[in-house]
Image 1 (cartoon, rainbow, N blue to C red):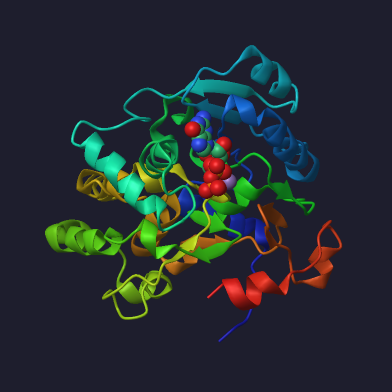
Image 2 (spheres, rainbow, N blue to C red):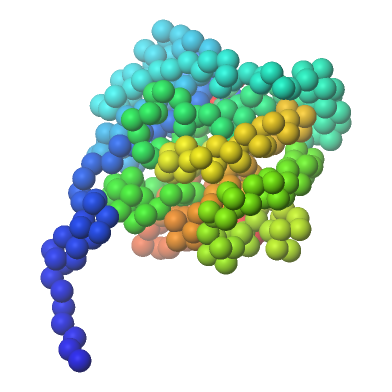
Amino acid sequence: FYFFAVPSGIVDVWNEYKTGINPDDPVNACFVILVRNSELEGIKSSIEQMEKTFNNKYNYPYVFLNDDDFTPEFIEGTKNLSKAEMVYGKLDEQMWGYPSFIDQSVAAESRQKMAESKVPYADSESYRHMCRFQSGFFFRHPLLDKYEYYWRVEPNVDFLCEIDYDVFKFMRNNGKKYAFTLTFTEFVATIPSLWDTVKDFRRDHPEIVKRFPPKEKSLWKFITDDDGETYNTCHFWTNFEIGSLDLWRSNEYLQFFNYLDESGGFYYERWGDAPVHSIAAAMMLRKEEFHFFHDMGYRHTSVLHCPADESVLQKCSCKYDSFVWDYNSK
Ligand code: GDP
Ligand code: MN
């Protein structure tokens, strides 16, 4: 038999023929930022770093979302931070607020009870609206309709490495659906019944579970150490998230989200969008559809991911932190 090299141009044409995608085609993508007016300084700082390290070369638009009206000061303070388009939207009551099936006095009581456990945001009502919004609604906001990929950005985070390739093209051209930089374990007190509800969903909807990849092809083992008996609480930290909006817009995910939502756990407990997204993605996607952006230095609060690879570190303004690799990432 013969070995011969196929010119790369022919490979590109073949890939385009198979997928209908030319790797150079533009990607419909945006940054999505849920933020309060009071966090203006913090979001300016995040965006300035995003522009400096990445977006001044690519000009992806920013979509700002808020449960309140953005103030003229907030809009003035952010609209010129990028050459890219900046759009500002408000959430309606369906996206931010109690659904009718929630008993608000039961929700208030459980906040009181959880306050004793001292977990972060134990008694916060708005934090619960936020987690439910990020779990089930951001991707359905009309301002995101025209986009296929998003990058979630928060106030007061750092982007610490120069990124000299188009991250969204990387995602699209490589079939990536979900990407992260940091992983964590969850405070158990915030999700006592989450996994039982996931199990109930799997039992009640075999027709949906059947459409998921087989367990060994998915990241099932990332979320459970005993083949589904219990949740090990591992999750991707969703304050940094790059993903395909179609993952969340899918009928499978929407049914999963509705099932969780109707159980009341976003309010009667304090389910975070991080475990919810992570469990769903781990069940719904194939391993190879995930991507760990090891080359992106990123800091949220006191937790830092800084690349371990010396050649990448040269483009970063952080120091490699073994804590994240050795202790925090299971
Ligand atoms: P943490 O990262 O879990 O500590 O939570 P954050 O306080 O950082 O909130 C997560 C994201 O939601 C951030 O982008 C916040 O700006 C945003 N956020 C949280 N609560 C509210 C709120 O009540 N209103 C608005 N508009 N944004 C919020
Ligand atoms: Mn945060």
